[in-house]
Image 1 (cartoon, rainbow, N blue to C red):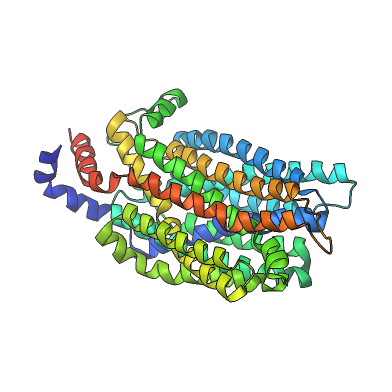
Image 2: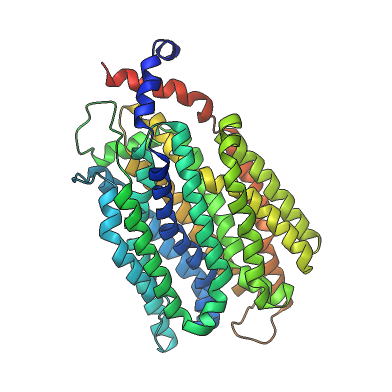
Length: 455
């Protein structure tokens, strides 16, 4: 396999032809605003909306979040297989962005429009609309993630596209975290959801319109790969297994911090109106840091930059732990934690898609859709688990939505989901990344795949 690198100067030239232009990489990034800002809205505010606005008990909300997200993860795998079998004039991933954008926007509005029913009716409505949302979200997000794998095989271009997408993700997160609470006072939750739904539709259309699919398999595999063969193939992909486990821990962490943020501002800091400041402190360092991550990745590799980020996040969590109710101290720790999370947010999709080439190298099957959807299962499970833990621990602590005071145990639970549990999960993330060595192996893998294409 080493010989193929020496013998292949034409390979680098071919890679140059496959590199997308900057404007196309930025157009890919715009779509993440439509996909992931919505996820931030759900992670940060839906639990609070259900408990404190609609009046559903925290433990019931936690169970809803986990059940729905487990179902979501299963549909991810099915959607990945559908994407791999899709054949259209627009490609396999792009057309889904066009088809699903409007239904997704409508589902966001329905999600934050719980009618004035009895308690059971509200729960039923929440289950139906949340499951509808995650089905449509899956049908848009899996193709979007898959698109990164078929835009290019040039590793640095893929990393840059992921970074650009994360810049828009962070812009969306900044908008959601900073302006959602004030806007609901003037236009209400339904109006706010309509605003975000419209932005999502526009963003997804821009990605569909300006991004191309250009990567094909190195083998003569059939147009339609049986699901059983694809599933067996990803189970032989050790790096996919590692990155999926990493996705679970990482997205659990994100949803713990975001999902309990309003509760923390209200009951630990003592002023819910401080939440926009906390949100700004969390997201602003991420946005600034993303503009410097490209050179760091080129020098140190994605894995090592992600490990360094997790170490910075741990330091931030320790600072918050030192004096949890002190706002300035909490903001310093939050800024460091946000800066530490930034590398993984900026590189995770690229790392997932790097495992596509490793899987093709090992098995001869290129299944971008299933690889992304199966890894997305880890993201969705982590999201559901994080939101479920918030609801469950609030229930264990005796939290009562809308109450004037909360039990001391509920306050401690709010601290745990913001500080101690995310800290422990960051340690696990570092351990997993130590086994993710694909950066060093990738050039040789890609050279071998190019050799197979020319046999």
